[in-house]
Amino acid sequence: METFKNLLSPLGQTSSAVQDTLKLVVLGGTVETARRISASAWNGFIESFFLTAHFSQEDYPYDWLMHWLSKQPAWGRSREFDITTRSVGRNTITQTTAGDLEDEEDESLVHGRRKRKVAFMPSMDTMHTIYYHGHWLRITRSKRCQDYGYCSELKISVVARSNDILKKLVLEAKREYEKDAEHRVHIFMADTSYGCWRWNGARQKRPMSSIVLEPGVKEFLQSEEWYAERGIPFRRGYLLYGVPGSGKTSLIHSLAGELGLDIYVVSLSSKGMSDNTLANLMGNVPSRCILLLEDLDAAFTRSVSRDSGSTGAPPTPAATATASETKEVNDGSTLSLSGLLNSLDGVAAAEGRLLFATTNHIERLDPALSRPGRMDVWVNFKHATKFQAEGIFKCFFPFKKSTPATPLSQAPSLPPPAVPEDVSQTNLPGSKRQAAHAVPLLTEEEISELAKRFADAIPEDELSVAALQGYLLKNKTRPTECVDEVAKW
Ligand SMILES: Nc1ncnc2c1ncn2[C@@H]1O[C@H](COP(=O)(O)OP(=O)(O)OP(=O)(O)O)[C@@H](O)[C@H]1O
Image 1 (cartoon, rainbow, N blue to C red):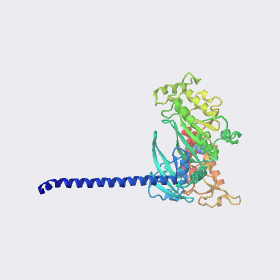
Image 2 (image 1 turned 60 degrees about the vertical axis):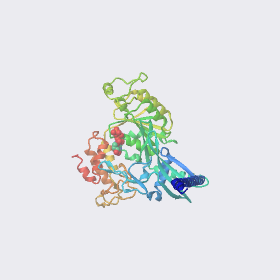
Image 3 (image 1 turned 90 degrees about the vertical axis):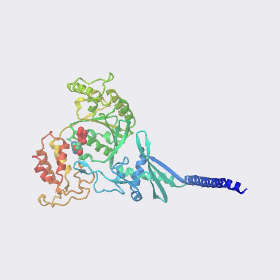
Image 4 (image 1 turned 180 degrees about the vertical axis):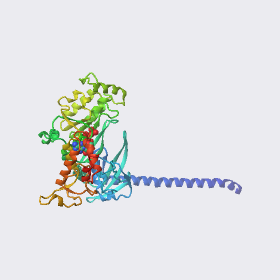
């Protein structure tokens, strides 16, 4: 009997091990089930109290919220963040507020290159908490994968019974955004790969007075139509043509600022541009904007396939030459003249949109483009005249208003004032034109005198205004020497 027990004992040990294992499995399973039930009960509880709003980068409210958040000290104090020089929305303001590493220079140029701003961005997938009107907002920024790449999303949750608090937040963000955007013009570029518009940056508005043109050139803007109730003329296309660096683009930007419109830019020379892409793009421009077709001629010097539907340009030698060039280059663009004309007609028919086109080679354009209702106002931009040289000099250097009693020679040389009443330097990009440079402050009369001498030394109709601006920029702290040395330049 004893022997039999001894024989069975290993089996008894095994069965208790199995029992122990089973106990562990049951215990583990119970704990896990309890955990899951409590987690889902907690989530259900949370969801029944939390309201959550999602904001996609593709839509404007995302920008309003990012802009609003950028102004919140808590957002800037985030303990986990990315450091970026990239834009995060349509609004560069998001980069330049709380948490900005470098805020004393705005859009300044260093050796001709734009200085990059570095900013703190709260990192992705981290929850940030902000107190807002008696509520704690839980905010998470995350990335979503889309057909054409990644798109950011903002999720804001709040414990509240109704969504009034979220509505209030969105409206406040919108108001603040619009207040700041008043001083900026947003630029959207056509993306030919996906036939859509991409935000490309926001520029400081530039006063129209800083664009120095011969008298009469700006007249086309002064018709009453422009400032009629809607602020937009009716069914008009404006073709600005002429030498490079003569102010065509600058004038359009300045106008956009005055009318409070964003600019949608299509470069017809872009790779992959086709009739369909152009039609898609045109179909997606908002109702109030400036549509700018850049390098209109480029489309005709590459691969525009003229079809029987087009009226055809007279066979000028230039056109013949470009036709032969056309065959050589083919980068996938299949834009046809009729496709372009159809798109233009569609845009022109839409009220509230302003159509502008620029070209450096007017002779290459097809006359069909200048039909009434298409490009019916043509404006020629030439090289700088003496009048423009004088004007640009005056725009460039700061001056102080001299009181009649003060003799010119005794006018004290003061550091540049920070007061906004100084109307000079409006031609320079950026808002802090006078900031760090010790420009000797001359009187208005002295600057006028120097400007006259500068203009006398500049040959008429030979240099572009951009070239003159480049020279002045190099001498931005030496107004007098710059005039003395201009003959050698
Ligand atoms: N008439 C002008 N008045 C004031 N600034 C000007 C004028 N023309 C050119 N500029 C300056 O020169 C630079 C280039 O000007 P802009 O880009 O407007 O020229 P553009 O005619 O559009 O040239 P492109 O044909 O090469 O596009 C800008 O920084 C602008 O400030």
